[in-house]
Figure 1 (tube, chains in turn cyan, purple):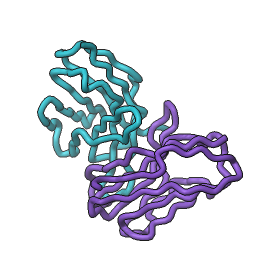
Figure 2 (cartoon, helix red, strand yellow):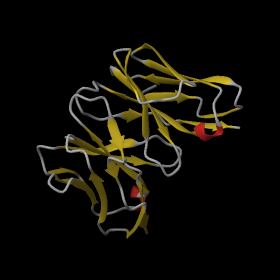
Figure 3 (tube, helix red, strand yellow):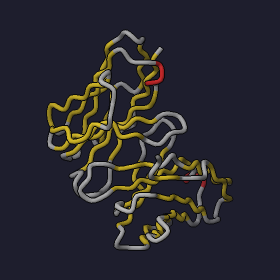
Length: 112
Length: 114
């Protein structure tokens, strides 16, 4: 049973527009969430995180929103740039555990 | 060197071979992880080491054998693998796995089992 789900395997967005990547989770014990970006032939790199005590965290063009009641988080990228084209993974963790559970990823393509 | 370094980047081995993947982190972190990434599947946690002690073995077959001689080095010893073990193996580190925070990943070792 997949505890972290990214139901959209791919997304195409025009340069300058907003990209919205979604992630759903099932385990109510998760209290920390992260987004990673991965380019081909490279390891994932950390983008932004959010703790369950918040519902929004912003870092430059990247904003993560958390809806605990819906067990849903989303990553907004605005404005989108061609260099943002990559695979984006969301991950979740529970305090005191050693596990980060990852989703399957969403491939974002930003069209110039 | 900085960050998390994995060698080799690519490895092709037969089912009867024995090989090892190496990971080194230069971040002063206390925890190290092995993840497996197969096509169209989520990153799967394999092992976690915290202060050189294994704290998580996520039901990984015994043909994968981890070793953590110190907090900076992590190995994954491979023997009698199967073709379905072909995947990207990612090493990661973090400051303390008991406190959620950022994982720092290496670039991965692409393994092909013939």
